[in-house]
Image 1 (cartoon, rainbow, N blue to C red):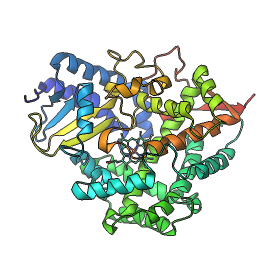
Image 2 (image 1 turned 180 degrees about the horizontal axis):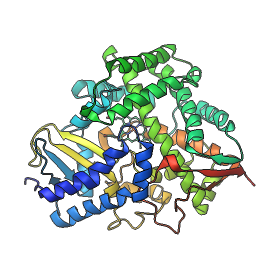
Image 3 (image 1 turned 180 degrees about the vertical axis):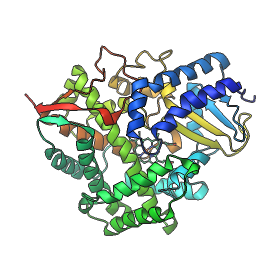
Image 4 (image 1 turned 135 degrees about the horizontal axis):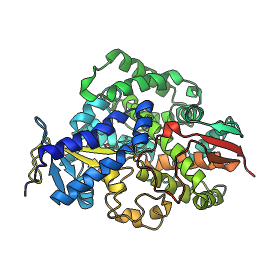
Length: 428
Ligand code: HEM
């Protein structure tokens, strides 16, 4: 049966109330000023409401939008999310048109925008280097050492804001990915940031070929050193063809580590405001690098505020009555905050990732799912949980920026990570 098409009015509602705010916030690189505004108006509340209204009205798994010149459909049921993601890359290809045009600006050979044999090879390369199935990457002991060194540079009392935190975060990331001697190479991450800003505009902005060559050239320089104890060294040992362009893969990794940094800062805010969760996190911290409760806290932070709110696919053939080349949107906040079905929709609930409830729901996909699932899921959970453990080891945090995050409150639908500030003092 062919998917029905939304009315023009409903299509306009989706364009202005769901896609508009998502695009305005910056899909590839967040825009801090817009994020502040989106938090103020709690933009995701009305976006989720629009999606719930569409589900109630049309009651179908897939709903086409009345977009002129582009076949496009929204996923409206949890089971359909599972189905679409499980059947990637065929017939639901992650290399969606809008994504290709955006990501091509800084990762022309990235796996996420590759197709066919190239995609399969690049996926394998990513999985090998990132040790996808392993909860703890073999670099874990070195990650612990570097995180501790960098966190030690933060003051033990005073104010912690985004700028201070981000400086430390990026030092850690560059050391892990490119090697210790890249620690202070802010130029590379800044230039990459410029390219990513232009990528926010997808095909509406020029390609910036010169800047792209500069960024990829700098990354190639770092990778050539293959510094011991870094992912660059792992890359040097991982089988690949020249065409797989490791600098492109690393362009994606650095872009995605930006999201991981935001998530860890938001998780710190949740732990600072949830005494019970904080206690559980602190209790496990010194004993093991596994840190299951902290990992669950990170997962639930991404559930509450997904860093990939729009998971996009393009159909590679006619499927479910949709023509080949139809764009498919899984708008994750709709499923993650579905208060009509999830009792914990607006609560911080790390326990759902530990007792199996989250895994039973095919639409809770903070790291996507299926063959296109984030190959760095475990690496991210390892690095961010170790960072949180180090931040909380000898310091207490009080959230001073005014967001109401405690257990008595509904968690805000939009949370501007750039605006979070903490008062820090040595642990009592
Ligand atoms: C909190 C941090 C992160 C989150 C929430 C996250 C989430 C995701 C999601 C949802 C996707 C699927 C995107 C899509 O299908 O359109 C994805 C793909 C991917 N992620 Fe992550 N990611 C994170 C960090 C990272 C990091 C740090 C790396 C690398 C070191 C990474 C590497 C990748 C790659 C290579 C893909 C493409 C996979 C493919 O197409 O097969 N991610 N990630």
